[in-house]
Length: 467
Image (cartoon, rainbow, N blue to C red; front, side, top):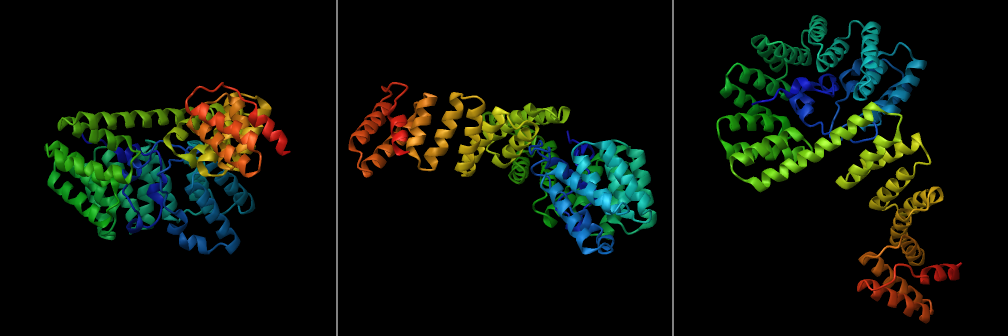
């Protein structure tokens, strides 16, 4: 019943980030917390990559301050999902400083997240070649190999790292994960034990050891590890989920439900967590709640499919537009904007991109930008939808004459349009234009009763009169 999430990782850098005791989650947690990718570069919205630079502080200090700052800026681009920009920035650094191993590792991180696996592996190998005595580089490459299913090669890298640094807790933890994949459960537990001995606050190791202990049918010990992991880090969502699975197996449904709900509170976009809670709701015959979780899972699967389409064709604006529209429906405005931006970088005259971005600007409160984008869209193709969007932006700006003119052009009738006509009527009356104010008020009342004709020319007349 328990799934082996830690080895299905699509984000590899969780194994080579900050010092283990500072890592917020285990490898299971990192995999579980990776909601379907949403930003323009398909960086998971909830992924929290640890800082490789912090873990390699001694190497960083050897560089000049300007290069240090450039590397930190590039790492920040990766962390915030701007992967293409990160690769470009790091490529510039490498061109100027071709022997800087840290730059190669950071570029590998960004390329791995973009699924440019060949480039990522080449960069990691170059880092190892440049600094063959740095254990952290072998751990980074080993975890990448592990996440891509190359278990034997990953173990070789972890072995080398431990020869170079026998006190590297992360290398023990990651080698333990690799050994679990090949069924060497007792040796895996020994590795996790060693990682914990070196760092008693290493949450990753406790959570990963719990999985190996379950496979060895030592469930009480596994449960104790998860309890301790959550004491050390109450935000370790994967530990809640794993503990919930243990309790689900023993038919302790209410307690399992509480654990899954805690995991979802920390990571609401995780389909696995939702699936486990849905299963528990079904056991408890709480069918409406199970159906709600099922519906949410379907939405997440749709987002995952849209992201796969992006990966298949990065040069086409359509996948980015489709994902941007979906994210707007989900209320993920920043991620939607990133997708529309990228589509427009590929094709600056992309009508859907301009309108989608205009809607996003309105949701963000940047109404003039919405006017600008919808005006560009109208210059390309004067569709009613573009007039309606620009009308909304003008209404938010308090430019009621322009708003109602656009609503007329859009042939739009709804409560917001009626309210805009009412506001416009008041504006006209305050300006001493009583006759036009009465006409606008009449129009507002007609719209409220839905008896108005679709097109009125009051707005157009008033706009021209204002010029």
